[in-house]
Image 1: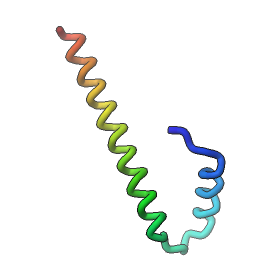
Image 2: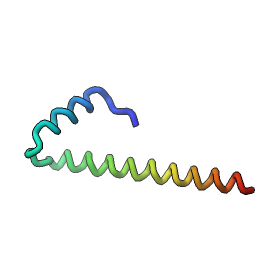
Image 3: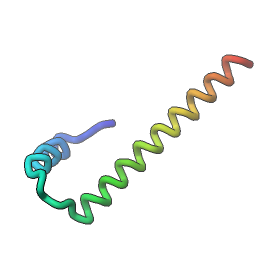
Image 4: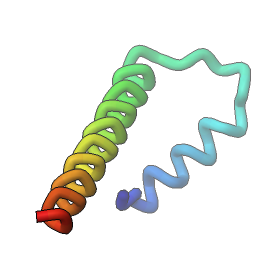
Length: 57
């Protein structure tokens, strides 16, 4: 996954204040990141399963 430089600096800034409650925008972004990760895992699993089936045929 490619993360822009500005995203990295934002992550660093946000983690420096651990008592800050996440905003709704933060929560939406977190949900989107989890959804992207789930989709990537699912695609990888499907690809691996397809590769395994191709090897046995």
